[in-house]
Amino acid sequence: MASGGGVEEVSNKQVILKDYVSGFPKESDMYLNTSGTIKLKLKVPEGSNAVLVKNLYLSCDPYMRPRMKQPIPGNETYIEPFKPGSPIVGNGVAKVLDSGHPDFKKGDLIWGKTGWEEYSLITAVQTLFKIHHTDVPLSYYTGILGMPGMTAYAGFYEICSPKKGERVFISAASGAVGQLVGQFAKLLGCYVVGSAGSKEKVDLLKNKFGFNEAFNYKEEPDLHAALKRYFPEGIDIYFENVGGKMLDAVLLNMRAHGRIAVCGMISQYNLEHPEGVHNLMTVVWKRVRIEGFLVSEYHHLFPKFLEFVLPYIKEGKITYVEDVAEGLESAPAALIGLFTGRNVGKQVVVVARE
Figure (spheres, rainbow, N blue to C red):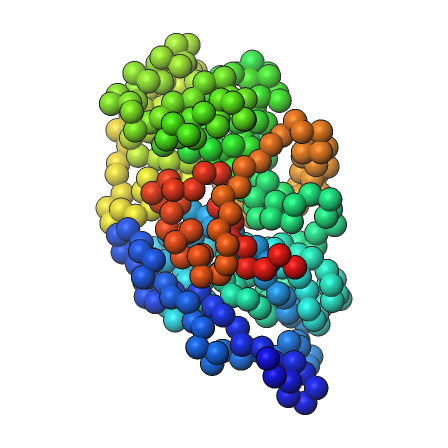
């Protein structure tokens, strides 16, 4: 650590994307830049309205995988791809060290888009949220109180229009979003079933998150039959995180006027040629509504969401499970682990605790 002209200068460890990724990502597609050559002045440049932060917690999320793909001209995506040779970018929790923006001051805690590095100069200040409630774990702002929490809230309440007593199915149900959708549905008085990829996760769904039933999709040779077993009268609401064969099986089991909120399709992210869906005709004769959504369009509901969820957390009526990886150097393996189901709960990387 050096200081030049009275301004402290630090070397800044970063996780860099080596090149665009096709097929299944590997840890070696990223590398940790620790050479000490990346120097950063701990001061916002004169006249800039950027915010300089020290990163504390980083979020690993499935949507980051499509950002590693080479962009195809004419094939627009909702979020820009990562740049090879530059740090990975994602949601995180950070502490403000210096600010050129009137809404943020030194010492503030924030969550939002930041770099996979020790320190970040954030120019897209509009993507940041100030943290006012610090009587809950700060890491929660990468999960239940951050983007995944808002995703579960908007997807379930705004897209699914749920009613008490309805039958709800959630795929990837023990993940950052699924575990919350299930608990929201239970609080509303719904019958809730989730699928996950291991016995440990199935036990978690039933015993910790209070799902009525759960099953390991890897042990079900016939997903249609499995869903028929748990939903003899059909599914009213499907919260879609997986796509592929699971979506096809769900379509055969939907009830009339059912709703499907399409949050993600993790089974498709590493495929060069996405799988097709075969049972779409059921959407017609069962009058099923399938709707995709982006959480960014619901950010205006964040204050309302906090008002709703914080009391439930404090009363112990909603519980949240995190899988914590220590140190920036563990971030590549933590991210790749999402696609093999290695994580149990919300995957978080701790860069620094304060």
